[in-house]
Amino acid sequence: MSDSTENLDLTNAEFGDASLVVICEYLKGSKVKSAKLIRNKLTDEGFKKMFSYFGGVINLNLSQNLLTEHILDMIFDNIASFPSLKVLTLSQNKIIERKHKAKIEKLRKMEIMVSV
Image (cartoon, rainbow, N blue to C red; front, top):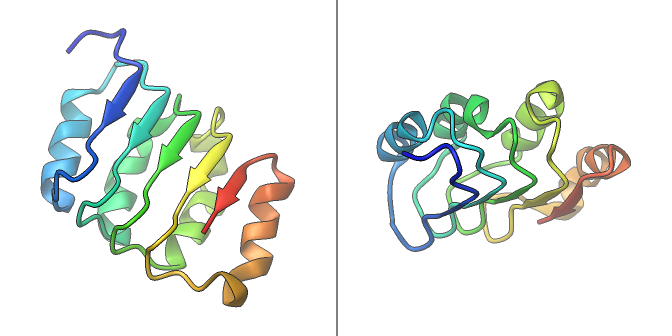
């Protein structure tokens, strides 16, 4: 894959964790700035295996997957792996915003616009 790939859009692909990890491995070395993994079957465990590939991503849209509040902890605990991240969209996952408002606010204080 060309190292100039800036936009990764896998919306509606319905890929599971294993397929998404393979795709990310294939894109290793690309300069992806925007990643849309909307309406797939991504879980917390799958994202954990993938987040090292998103170091240069500015906009990460993970809407409509199978993610839980644990993804907020993963991102917060590994924030150094996401130095460019500015927009994180997690809508329509298994995250209840009002229950995890403190975690979301911590990320927002790090200048990351978070939508749940």
